[in-house]
Length: 316
Image: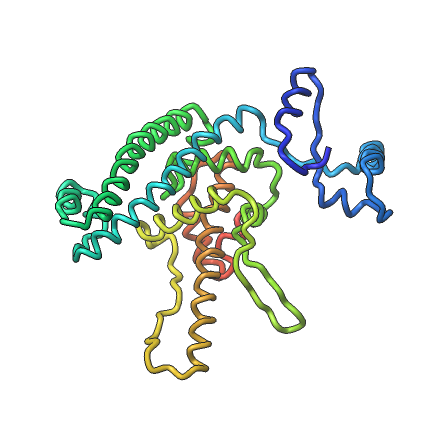
């Protein structure tokens, strides 16, 4: 069948009947169609023809155990996003009252200061309604984090990835589950493309234009890899010697230079996702496929021997 819409009930029914289900790439199957007329009967005949000719574009489908382990990851990810939205609103309340303490607001002293503000009745109710769900979310997130750490201890492939600096249990388990079989990819840059960490390119003749990242694949894993790469760069500067150009003053610039500044900011975004994002995905894939721990000295040699614009792409 084509990979068109979620059909878990159908997959479960075939599994109970001990029938093997192949799911094909709908985009590739569409290119095989010759006639412009499209009916269910013709689609079935086309799939049967591709199967008989051994040209069916089968795609990898995660197992039921894989999908079950993804649930705590997504559940925690969504709850962290909800908590972040609540914390941002409470930060706005504190800033409006003249309190700027950033992360210290969530400590005991900052919490007491936040609760001690004399606000209007509806503003006070809003503060109370924001603090209550945040207090409920914290223990649930902690419980899910502990469950994820326990699952990582049971997975040898995930424990191997613990040798990568800046990568924690959450990122490791998400990478192992979403990438699945490492044999599906030949190069680390294919993993980066699979996760949507490569820039969109629109080039013609001698003009090369790079846009935003493509963003297919798992948004959760893409977010975790970029966060892990940022943490690695901040904690271990020797892992990434190249740095973006130093920004210049934006004030008193003519319109033409302001446009150049805009292109500069866009270029920094491309640099950030293309270099740092691929750094995490390619090296994690390298450790996962070779079954060897990460060799820091070898990676340092690779970093010095290749240009920064292809850094992270030449790993096997």
